[in-house]
Image (cartoon, rainbow, N blue to C red; front, side, top):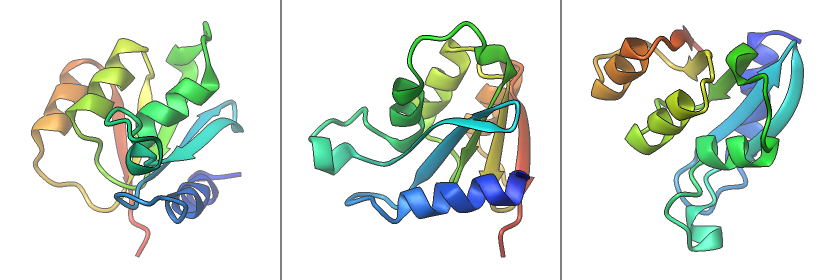
Length: 119
């Protein structure tokens, strides 16, 4: 599988959302270990955004530094903080690069960010 395949799965996940249409897929060694979508309304939980729910589903692991998170949108600060806290090393975001305090925060904390133009 390649970046486009993983992002397509993230977009399929986002279609399940009752809230913001956002999806995420967590990958290690080209294997999906978790996937999710924004479940904030479904669970009545403001922390159940796509990125966090995906990381929750992966569970406790010792190999976060070799993980890549694919997401259909630039994470908010809650998601970005979780990525940094759990030591996820890279993030692939759908769309084109733009100025964002969240992206600055992620980069300052050593997260490798790549954009995938899905248009």
